[in-house]
Length: 161
Ligand SMILES: Cc1cc2nc3c(=O)[nH]c(=O)nc-3n(C[C@H](O)[C@H](O)[C@H](O)COP(=O)(O)O)c2cc1C
Image 1 (cartoon, rainbow, N blue to C red):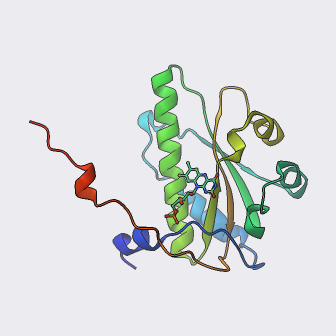
Image 2: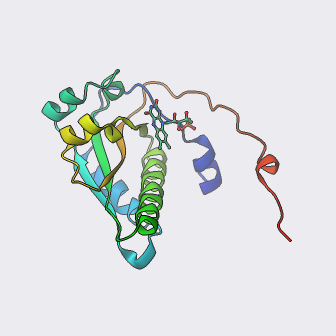
């Protein structure tokens, strides 16, 4: 698939089959994701594979669609608010890379933002000042939702003098 088609055909999966994700595959997708742009090459992502006890404590409404893997993604704090923002941007690029690498292999990801809530930060053991960018359910999708249409990009575009 071309990169163009890969980007456009990726969807947020909400239900997964019970098929496991091979650890080698997960590590390969994460390694590919780490080629995300990041300022000063500070690689601000930190990853936590969420085990069953922690997962149960998160009490996600659908238990991440039954995904075989749940992964929390943290962004390191910065020395200034600007650097913190840059770190969040870089980690978001990391996550998008991960989504695309998984999709390329036929897997899917459920990106949940529940980890940002204070009690869930605590459950995840997020260090103070770290941002929780997402808690990701990763697996093979049981169903792939239809893409919701996007605003024509021309409506988002302006030309500056
Ligand atoms: C930062 C971020 C947080 C998200 N958090 C949630 C969430 O908490 N629950 C959810 O169902 N989807 C969440 N999503 C997924 C979006 O709902 C989804 O990307 C959007 O509906 C577009 O669908 P698509 O990914 O299939 O194109 C999140 C996406 C992003 C980028």
